[in-house]
Length: 320
Image 1 (cartoon, helix red, strand yellow):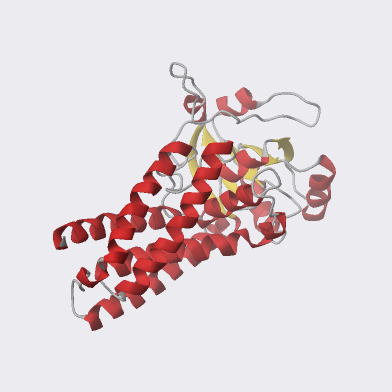
Image 2: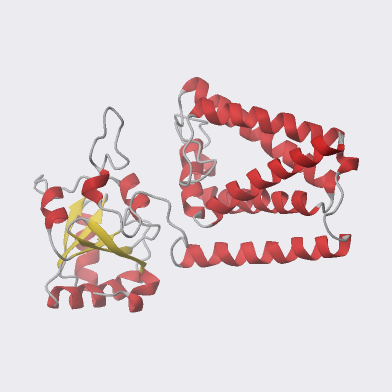
């Protein structure tokens, strides 16, 4: 029994640490997933949407910290009961998503590992069984080191995770698991392999007149794209920095566009206010949120290959 408990402890701890870490480096991705769950057609809890980022941060920190505490053997009873509470919530959400086909990707492992809805549900059933064993036999969970060291490792881990969360929210994810990571080619990502849907299937750039410029933009040698998925939610002060970078890019011969899902009128107001010399292209808002976790952000392309990504706060680091 002790061996079984130890194996279960290691497996559950590793799962929660991995799951928490891949979301820790990209908390906005989890926030967008919460917005999806809170939507009218899923849980119909739209009043919680403004708090999606807060829910994301709290859940991520709880998930990864409980994994660390279980691994260290710090406060084992509190840890396993907390894990049971979280996994029961996860189990319900994944069952609801799978049964009603509401959210096809629960985001349990961020963008690092994709599981089907039912696959995620069955994974959670296994975790529930293992955690129940840990709850019933928590007396066998002993600290890997002394209790004092386990306590300080847990506290230190929390502050490290908190700093990482702050850093990636101000800048960009420190690890990019998405199909729009630096070095990825968008055109190649849009190609079908057999009957499988390509990883990039909704990248479509359109002018205000309705002209499709997707292939034109992806064929250009040097392209700089300002990405602002929603201008009503954008950091307006960021456009002062954006103005400087776009002017330099234009002088160096770059093709420059602003990508947004907002209206032409909304963009014209910002364009005139900051005297931007950049035309806009329409693109799906979800796609733009996937491309870069900044609003606004900057993306550079060369023949469809992503060569750089920066948040507006890091415009001094943009390389052209």
